Structures are given as C-alpha cells and as structure tokens.
Length: 118
Picture 1: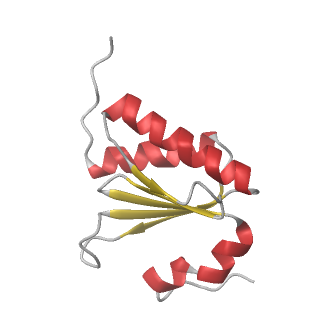
Picture 2 (picture 1 turned 90 degrees about the horizontal axis):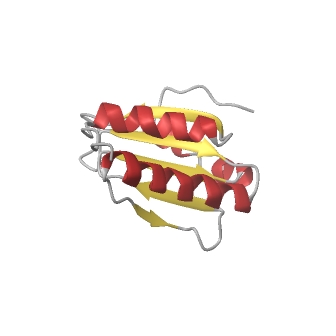
C-alpha cells in the first residue's frame, strides 16, 4: 500500500490542476488568496462543458485527493451540476458550466486587475 503524500497547499494545488486537466476541464484559472482571504491559500476556477461533466470532474477530483492525500473535501452543488464547489481547506475549487461562470464572474471579484474576456 502506498503511503499518503504530505498535503501542503502547493502539493494540493498541483494535484487539483492535474486532475482538472486530466478530466478535460477548460479555462482553468488559479488565484493566490494569501493575504487576500483567510478561507484558503488558493482558489481554482474551471469550466466543464455540461452539468454531467461538471459533476464528474468534481467527483473525480474529490476521490483523487482522498486517495492520494487522505484529504476529505467538502463538496456542494453536485445535485444540479451548474456550479460545484470542492473545498479542500487550503484550495477552493469552483467548477462551472460556461454560462454560470460567465454570470458569476468570480475571477473579477478576486482579480480586480484581470482583463475581461469577451
């Protein structure tokens, strides 16, 4: 049996980004929250093409983090699949359907100087 890896916020972030990429999430954005918020060290925002894909990406991510690091993630929103939140403690992951992501525009809230995408 493999020993669990140490889950620093940086190793969790790398695992989150790899999982999202492996599952074909699109428009993946990472935001460093250190000094901006106490809720975590990083926020990751990604898009899935459909409710089904959004839910699958979130479920696989939570499962991989549990298997690799022993991290039990809190998830919300899997029932509808429009916007799923996966909270690992240090890394908060938002996975959206495209139109829901466009509506909420979290990147603008957390990256005030970010360029707008049209």
